[in-house]
Length: 412
Image (tube, rainbow, N blue to C red; front, side, top):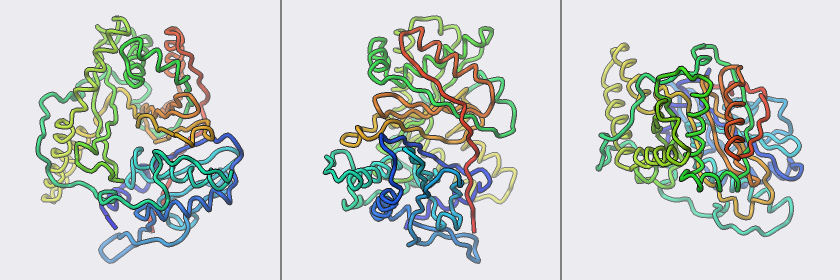
């Protein structure tokens, strides 16, 4: 059992980094069948079945043979690591047609969690409806485990080059995000997939590029006097660059895309070409390896010093590399390729708490499902994006805000 995620889990128990995946299925969920599917699924992913225990040296990870908990209501909060979820760091709940899956971000990222929940939904749908689904694109519960699934890369890699990497410098800051009080406001933003894809192709945009351009134009429309660059922090899967294509750990780094206010008056086609070029350039494997190597070198420095001020300075350097302070952040794991599961899934939203503004983009049920998560109350930004998309012929529906509290965990 790889314990590379242990320090990350125990480092921030009061504000843990927990992903919540919210699915809406076409029919009411049978909790007993979902529970059976969960226990079948976890056997394929044994590295997710562990508990944390206290030792004389601090904390340790041990195997956890207890069942993964699947509750029959959303009314009881899922507190990861607690007795209520059998001390696991993954848990679920069902209510009506909705399924909630909570996973600590230190044990997985959106890509590896997707593998898990596609297996889970495959097992559930197969049993509930008694159907033989096409397994293409789905890891089956009895399939072998790849050698690098439970591997975390810590060594330095050849072929790094950070000369073309964009860094965040004096960004436009959403005025409401200067408040340090943590709040949670979640909006569901849906855009028809075919309509959005057609529009993005027509303006030399990928869906991610088009959304990034629209976000920058939206900010500038609300703050026309702004002269600072608008930065998007985009999560990029670095597995191929790190030579660990199947790793279950968080293997994404953030790239920063800059929009200058003076250029936002250009037409959508030109802005799309410029933005897409930035994304392609920043996603080069040599740049991702540069970020990885930089983090590894700084981490080694942190371990070698006991000076708390120096440790804090070095930790801030890592933060600037992997997160920094863009105007907003966005994550899109790409087409989930639901395959035979598609007719059974209406929506999927991914929630990650963020005190600024974070967009998690998924696709299900013939539409893009965007979880718009912000740490402030003002709904002017999400409504302005809706208006801008509609002005460009793209239908967009916004629901919310829905209550969203900081997810909790419990250490022994």
